[in-house]
Length: 365
Ligand SMILES: Cc1cc2nc3c(=O)[nH]c(=O)nc-3n(C[C@H](O)[C@H](O)[C@H](O)COP(=O)(O)O)c2cc1C
Ligand SMILES: *[C@@H]1O[C@H](CO)[C@@H](O)[C@H](O)[C@H]1NC(C)=O
Image (cartoon, rainbow, N blue to C red):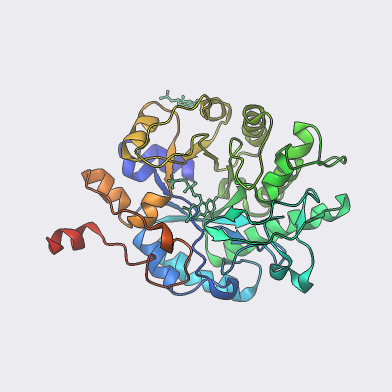
């Protein structure tokens, strides 16, 4: 589906602009709220791909307040009008499905139990996480080998539920130090079973999820996000290049819709920063549609596509603050600045749906 999209829109960068998954913590009680209808609909361009904010797959998956879920009937029903609004404007909407693993505390867990992970190594307390001061991470409990199929199944069910809600597909959240990354990265995973040790073993969990989800809803409805180079939330790897390549190559077997990778450089748009690493080897290794994210501005995006370093370019903070980002890029107009202070505040309007569109701004002058 995304493959076709790319081919039919080659002329315009605007159709290659993807809305990044952005946690906004405005889904009270893990239920998506009606204010998300306006938020996503504002960011929809005909033919464009939107990736919904990370959405938890089960009651053990949570680590932040007010993130949406997709494991109950109520949550599925609540997503429906949001998805409908995106479709009404011709957008393509994928749901990012998420398990935080050890990035949690027992207050978010059923019966106050310990969060689960690939390991029982705790995160350093007081870490500044996701803009929120998650003061205390509860030391996790290492999943027993025989418990792993149940977690894979939670992702499968979430994907099925996303179809029920009307999404066009799902993106497996395999990035940024959350559960799947806790399996992949050798600085976290200290297992001695078939899910730990070698690269093949550490990637087994991720690939089992890809396979289960692809079998459930069709590979053309499945994407995955990976950040081999990031060490966010203490999830570094001693050989990120090898990890990224192994995943890119292994994913070819499943024929999924896309592989989405986060650039090794993390920079504020506009800043220049030389990085010795690159996603180009992974882009070349993966046979399907490739999406790049992280620190892109308009010029970088145009250049990356022109140089065939990616198929689609994903924008986070700039899209958060500019609901009409594709249009602004097309016309090369100035951008609104994002306000970090309201990224995760629960207000249904402020910092969420009140960033101005181009027209409003022009009229104001
Ligand atoms: C407010 C905020 C929330 C985010 N939430 C998520 C998320 O839910 N899932 C995810 O994979 N990445 C998340 N990210 C990372 C973004 O998707 C993106 O990769 C990052 O912001 C870098 O891209 P940018 O430079 O275009 O902003 C988040 C980033 C921000 C700023
Ligand atoms: C762009 O790169 C991809 C992946 O390496 C390759 O398959 C494709 O042929 C390239 N396209 C052009 C126009 O060079």
